[in-house]
Image (cartoon, rainbow, N blue to C red; front, side):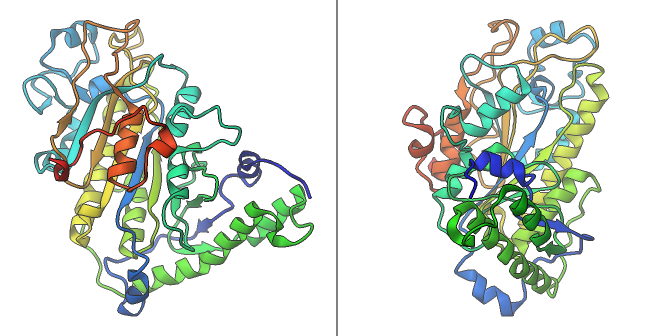
Length: 411
């Protein structure tokens, strides 16, 4: 039987054969049927992490705007958001007006921006920087390992996918672990078995030779296929309960978040969800395209938080939003911005210590025209691992990255 690596396996299967879903999206409801809820209670995860990736390099300067600094307006001739348009979060910085849907959560302590996040010797390549964010700089491993996959390897085992990528995007490297095979969910109606796809790949790679359980990757794929029907039954049972009333935007991102909300309402024991929003590589004519993306982001997350509140699950789900890098301070000649370094990450869901965490980078002390970071993103990861997923971050990140105080429960 052929021998090959995890990454080759993921590539060979199109990174989505672990679980493929299709069909019309139904209304999935707030509470599961009583007959299934009792059997799920013991498997219900304590906390859930939803990771939103803003692909392309989000312009943090036009996201969390330093309207109190003249240097912003001196470098953003066409792109600057006027002081009268900024939604203030203090005397120095505030939100892009399209992020206003997040304001109630920020005021209630259920959302926060972490400022000045990056890493030493920043890489301005989309692919290499995203690889670093996905793997927590652990690219020296012979077998690729993502920070979320490494976390899932350490979570209590169950027969259902502990990690789900929502949508048609390829499974990100961040979800690749040593033991856990991530899955892609395209639609919550029909969890279609992937035997045909699996058979084609097996024949191509010679996996169907010998005992089926002789290859651990094959074994995991078969196990994931076997759970598809069970997951489908859970969702069908969930549809017997009363519908939720949250009004959802019609954007693509909002519909992805609605799928996550539906799965949480169905009491699936999935611990980690991953969602992607593309389009942030704004080299030219940045506005109003960037504002439209921010509106899609804020509208989706605001609806998601409202849905969780209605479910009574707001305290056990955290949304973590990141991008591979920020943009340069000075706009370019095409009314856009070029690849930068430090930026902001955003968290939402439970109660946070402050809506603004960390310090905004200086606009006068720059690194080759880019903002300097003051918080290593791996310290943010350490906080999420230790204080949210209850996983020892030193086993994944090493001892160098101390967790940050993020949550009100830590005060």
